Amino acid sequence: FQKIVKLDQTSGFLTMVVWFRLQWPDFRLAYDSTDLQEKFGWNSSSDFMAIDMEKIWVPDIYLLNSVDRIKFLSGTTRAYWYDAFKLHEDGYNVLLNRPALIKTRCDVNMTQYPFDVQECLLRWGAWSASNMFFDFSTLDHNLMMTGNLPDTTEEFNVTNIRAESSDFKFKVAEGAAFPQVVYVIQLQRYGFWYMV
Image (cartoon, rainbow, N blue to C red; front, top):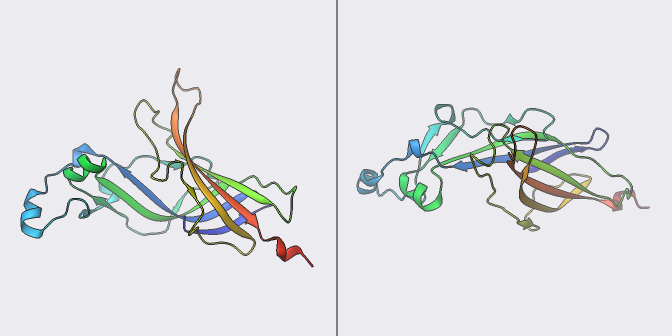
């Protein structure tokens, strides 16, 4: 997460700038970097080739509780294309990292105003494939972040972010579950603005 732009308490919308980061294995793109190692001192754990995102398959991961389309903030986006060694060692050979503006639903509870704490959920997942076909998780799995949190707003301070992996179900097929990652962002209002 990069920055909270606005929490609209009337409409219940949270707008944020985030880094949309995906990494996945694509065995069709696996390549042997032996020649590169000999000629250029290639390091398989950190070296990559940049490739246009439009030229490769990208998983269809969405912000499931979005109220607007994700607006990517960069022009032409390039993916990081790693070699077969990286695929074998780390489980992925393609990485996509791009800034985006997202707008999601955030139900605001004003019962403790102006000393309230709000929790906003960002639900990420895919509509097209169940957990029978892919595993979707986060590098921050079950991590609670309290230090070096993203930007604050004039009215709120981010006090906690946690990531949870789970499945959601809807009636598409018997027993089908769809993996999702949910980020829970906790915002605490600066109450001193309202004290005399």
